[in-house]
Length: 154
Length: 137
Length: 162
Image (cartoon, rainbow over all chains, first blue to last red):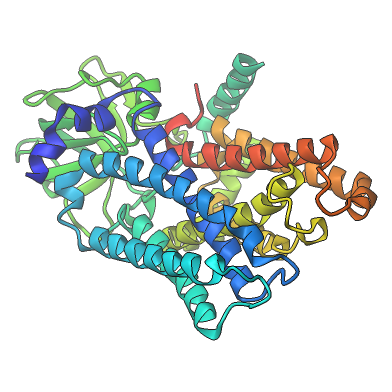
């Protein structure tokens, strides 16, 4: 099934087109999305850990919008990239490790959004648990980046 | 401005080409970039794809054939965009064509190599990227 | 220019680093992490300068800049290692020079802001919209860093551009 996906006309266009708009652009969009997702996470996580303490927590809710936009970009570009090499990448454990790390990072992000950044009252700061989640978020996204890069090598 | 800049870079590249064996390859670390081996055989597969082109070459034993090149090799090139600018295209080779490639073999002895250039039937060279051989002393 | 590129590539330093097979992929991963710190921290400042997130006190806009600078330092270091390992791959690449141009532009833009707009930061009242100069500085910065990202990722495809 993965082989049929890899052999599809769309997949063949992604990897076989001479246009810069095919693989090169899809890959670059994936990198831009990564910058949005992890960049926004860095801001949210660091604030949770106490950096920029004068910034009201609620003022950073916008960061999650940027994060979700980046995620949508990466979901779509990621689907296109995966489809184009489905049989090859689908057989590699490192791809599934990356997916697991992304899903875990998103779960942690969702919890932070609902708890710390969803609080009605800005005067109640992040809890100890929230700080642990913030560290986890940074580690999980870092891991996803490494797993993604290693897909080109192992 | 842009064509001028491109021309300047091309001139600089040609000037440097005499002495610089450039690496145009992201995972070059696994290849022995200072070693050049000639693979003379038949194309099994010509994969004109991104991010890396692959030419699968079958080298049979025979007179004038380097014994260590006998076998089936995966010769990896660069992006189709970069190779296209050197004169390659999706129809340059096809399965069944005779082919002569000069490439840098894998350091670990596996049957893979990094494409340097192809030698066409008329003796001209098709380079992977802007790198050119060191000038002979 | 050609001479020193060949020289650099022939040094024991360059060849030695190339021999460490895991070094290049490790530098790449660090380079991606660095860009996230940089775009996160500087992007936050840029968006605030452009007038977004008005509830963030203007004096806190640079709160994440130390982390952005750390990200830049990581990328300058890993970038230098890439260059030492494969000087010709970059020195002859139009995409790489475009990347350098936008890094310099971002730097000059930041210097302009620091040297001429500092006082206006302090005089901005809460809830007051940012002046046009701030918005331009923020937009130029954000655009520049994404251009750096673009040309960096397109290096294996644009190459010399010729």
